[in-house]
Amino acid sequence: MATPYVTDETGGKYIASTQRPDGTWRKQRRVKEGYVPQEEVPVYENKYVKFFKSKPELPPGLSPEATTPVTPSRPEGGEVGLSKTAKRNLKRKEKRRQQQKEGEALSRTLEKVSLGDTAQTPSVLQGSQDAPPAASDASDSASTTEKAKKMKNLRKKLRQVEELQQRIQAGQVSQPSREQLEKLARRRALEEELEDLELGL
Image (cartoon, rainbow, N blue to C red):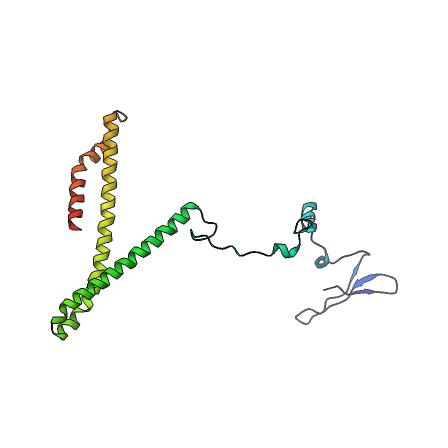
């Protein structure tokens, strides 16, 4: 918004009086020649900013039509621009989903088989038995995953114990600490626990 200037008969320059939003009036102010109001003062830009603003966006000779963005097609590996680790994680997630779907399909077929066996029972008893298998399948799959995790953990601990024992025998660890000795002593208990879990599956 340009500031309205008023010039009097002596040649003095004034900013005209204006009305405030609350209805009161600002009195006119005398200004010197060349005065620029604060809101009209251009923002200072150093030479680098001016250079980059004046610089064309495209290289010389390149037509704007040639720069239209092309939508990149997704590679088979998944998302565009992902690191190897992120792609590997995506594959793992997909694998888990597939295993979960297979597990659900397997549980459904088991349900159908078990329901087919109970078809000979009276319909009243069959109606009461329909709900529990679904709940038990969910708890079975949860307990199976728990067992699998525990088995993996036990195998890892056994591997660490074996590595520690090899290092002691090779002479890399001359004086094993108390924790290391305790770890070696737990080997038999870990093996027994792992065997129990494997037999339980």
